[in-house]
Length: 415
Length: 177
Image: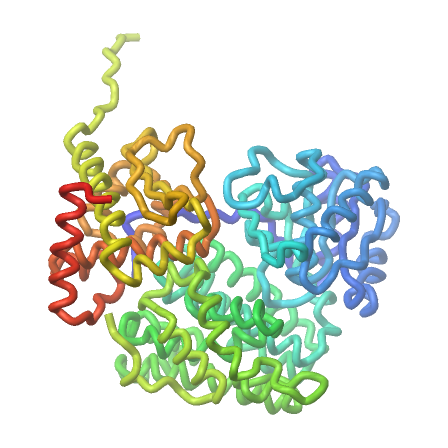
């Protein structure tokens, strides 16, 4: 077991998980001293009828102060400022975030403004600027991937200045995360696949990158086991409630793992592809994850080999020679991408070159790979990657991920 | 109840002095490397005008400050961060953590991964500073030690490395701007 000389771990989010977990929200809010929450969500979630399910589950035991269902796909400053005004004008005293990562980040941003009685979110960006607890926040994820329901970070776009601001504080952690199978039953297959691979990338990178610790290891391994046993199944059988609940738990576990050990080059590159080309985060994670393993293999062979146990099960793990285990883990993840590609009728991408926009053009054109590599160079996740990466290394990985070819181990510069 | 004499925590003067000396020397070496090493110069050139950063040990120092002048020249600006405008502050949480870093038992990356370092400022700038620190460490340290301090020891032409190393050492010792 890897036991670092020093590490920190914190997850103080109450987890309420089950097929009828939503029903607990009124009681949870009452215990937190709140009675009139602002419900923050987006049009997709509202259109899928999830706001109705939530309202029905709570019945008349809780009065919703206002519903804000127009959070943009990328949480931004304008939405946060506007919805903070709505919160105040509606006399709200808490927040419920119903949605994916963007909704949760927006709710966290609103919470900063309304709790600090501020009107300029920029004053609170960075780490350590928040000094006291915020208003009660309940997170209800409607995808099984981001893990935002258990993380202390909010990323909010400033469209005017064209940059993404990170807000980091333990006070941003939701008071409770509600993992309810009803919230993901209607999730389309390609989004189920991509968000599930996002959760897998959180857990796998948390397990082999430099910030790993015994507690993040436990949650990462549990997440990987749940994803390995359920992701493909829920893509094939979207109405499988047990599978959906397992995936919701996996995403939260992976969120706990990576928010306490951080992630590496897969996320550095994924953030950059998302920022330059606008590809969904989960799609990037699915494509890049095998490359993270290949690139770092020479430094983390033994640790990566351990992943075969939760992925393949004890029998396969026991039958595989230690020197072959990492290879099988990489092969398994590539095969999972292939299976998801087949299960979604080709809508789950396996490499960047096969992703097309509505006009039929490459969504991540090859000519933009140098720009992506330069952007990734400034990403903080590289701190936590076992092997060093410079511009040439990043470009080499991107070229391979664009073509869908495995990395040429002879070209990996080993430190 | 029997009363006991209060024993104040030791100031660890030897360890503190060692870390202070290392910070002073690394700060002056960065100043020299910005002129001598093309890649370090390019990293600074890409940072905003007037950019300044500190590497500090909590609580209360020692520290080093390095920044760009109006004319773009990189200068070591001493060891007192209080009252200065800094774009980036990298704070090592305690003296023991700093000692692990400056005795090269832990690389900057490992120290970050182990939560020993607090980064207060823009992450891309912090990434650039760490790349600069890595290059400077490769110049200052013998290979066997530098390999512990950086993730990947670079494969530079040895003549260039030795020549630059001598110039950076001379600059750091003599304080050439």
